Length: 243
Image 1 (cartoon, rainbow, N blue to C red):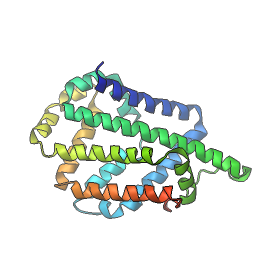
Image 2 (spheres, rainbow, N blue to C red; image 1 turned 45 degrees about the vertical axis):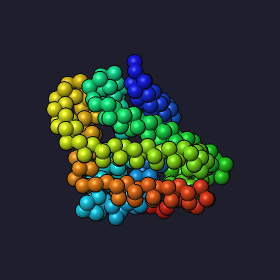
Image 3 (cartoon, one colour; image 1 turned 30 degrees about the vertical axis):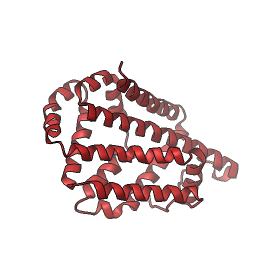
């Protein structure tokens, strides 16, 4: 197995391990879902202007649902894991590199979400038995848990991986042959069990092409996410959101 295949498979195995932990511990799973729901709502609030923007709305929604959302990607990940060697052979090198970044982002985020859920449970237990069963995520709670499980380097890596996927999709839009190749691969990808990956790539490509340039959009994402991370590490509460 080549290095790209090994790295993608390692990321998928890491994600599967997190899912197994949550399946074994139902309460932990509920806490992770509560945190993901908060993160989803926080993104919607932070980027409400981009989501409503006629040029950037589609890309913001793609980030929200495909890179930052609380959705269950088990089916997509299972497809990847079954056919990783075929994926690396079938898709162009640039797309394989994007899938590597996506896998690393997915594994890192899932690991951090599980660690935050454990920290949240421990924090409530230390605060007293009255709140031990609470599944309400507020700004102070999220901020405390967020700071407790990772340092600046890990959080910066999470942001950088998210941006790298966006930058790769932006790069694809400057290569019209790649879009043609993606269309031609639709049938073979479905036949090979790569339909979910194919749909993700086509959706991302079309969304970013419609934006007609992603530099400003990605700069806003980078600026706001890094500003939030800096504030949280300085001890600020996370934003208050309505879930």
